[in-house]
Length: 160
Image 1: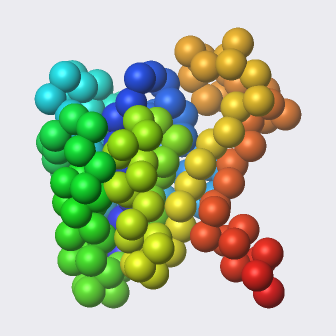
Image 2 (image 1 turned 180 degrees about the vertical axis):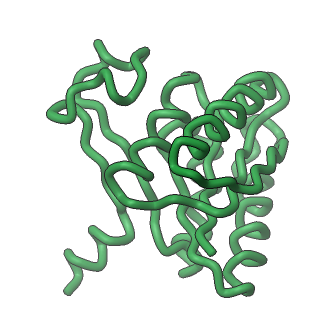
């Protein structure tokens, strides 16, 4: 089973576009999704969940989507919580992808803990070289200005 862990941030489109890029550019169609958020971004997490469900329907897919609230700017606490989720899912033999594109620094730092500990199979990041497109939907952004990265894959390639 494929698990996708993501987080809210400053942009409604970053969370959705990075999810769409994971599906479209990385062929990562998850069975289970965790959206980590802070209290003041709950609305954004709910919106992301609805958008994810609509997009997944287009791929004839359903996924269990869970929103988990963590304390703002608490990278230790959010990291611990993300680590618990990754550890639980990995112990069940699942493939873990962590999406860091939309997250704020404190939550991203905490989210990288599972990758360091070897529980994350993928760490996705969608880099936009031109922020003129930041408030557009994925398919309206030229592929020439967006670059999908899987840090785990790139590190393995660089080391070998």
